[in-house]
Length: 304
Length: 304
Image (tube, rainbow over all chains, first blue to last red; front, side, top):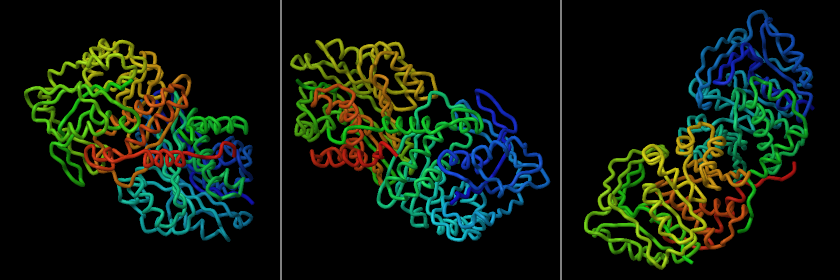
């Protein structure tokens, strides 16, 4: 059974202090699908692009066992985003956002994927996230991302989504905003009461926190001496996370913890290169070596 | 053999959104010594207070097996500090700093402690830190703290200190400033080249990083739903860290990792109450229970 991934596909123009790229492959669904592709397949990618979207990008997705039958190609220009990162890569300016064909995106899940049990809702309008869920026959594990823009602008619709998802993955500032609570631990409790039984709070260079059952699990970020391009790291995390769980089909706490580590692992590869380049030539061995490095990074004696 | 702790003793006036205290026991040496007292003794406290310093505070220190023979009581007022924390407790304003008798502090190590092997240099003028080291016969494990003020104002003297210490414990912004490098992993490498073979970077609510040999070890902060007063958490970390190592006298990597966890453990107790109150009624069982909670917080399967 396939994994359904819904979100944006974009052409990104990104500048960092180290380099810049123009019209590179980007978008939340792209990063999620590529990351997940290292664990499971086929992946059903649902999104929209304009007829200017390069054929080589479609080919690249297909080469990663990503099914593009749910990818609508319509007349017009593809969604474009441009950002500039500062020397402190935690700070970025959005230079422009051109929604283009993404403005009228109406996700349509191909018939053959409607019985999929695993769904990853990238960061799009919660109204569209609901539309996706309404097309699915019996989704049993739904992962959802969102952002400040929807928390502030479409709170009611977002709360509807949250009642129907199993996992919410957001960053720390989004968690504080959604819960209206500065303490992350209390914020997490409040958000879990909104619906998702699993909450993951991403903290960028400080790692991530998993809240599941009565457990809190903490994982640091992978210590990198050079981060080339943070774009897509959060989406990549979500892709690695759901990809691993889709593969194992084990939703117990230990498996979910491992999924968080695999999400962090894929995100660490993502930021090492521009655009999606860090996600193109991975393999089982490299991914597992880094998982192991995460293990060593956090090990200490159980008893002193 | 005792552990020598040098630093400030202060009367703190602190306001948080939850409560406030006036002239409460504070100061870097106070927090370090109290935290260390749960592991090892006797602790030689070296500092200065005015003759207004309440006798009950001296008694409190002595009750924690802290030797106050190195505590100078001189005519004048004790060092006072006042701070106000915002609702986001990561942000604080210093309302006033009155150095008083601390301005002319000239640390004198009691003869009986000059052969101690473990020394903890709290955050004071690096000139004074050097004076302390010059009085010690053969210190083999020196832990040092510092702050932006000295990094900017007494860089040369600080670099002299760093050549003579084994461990530097600073926070992330201080590390970036000292190394002139925004990436923490590269900053750590540069700082280790300045002298200390062990570097610990504290990241407040995001935990701490240990750099030792070629190892990086990461530990999260203990997830607390309520932080009452962050004052002294960094000093407490240092005290728990060196106290544990002084007790075990094992300076191998696994022992040092455990010391980082015990430092984090003591710091988590510190911030749960105002002033030093979180450090007054601990015991072996409570400390080890929380160490164990840190263990559970970071556990995941070695193999997926």
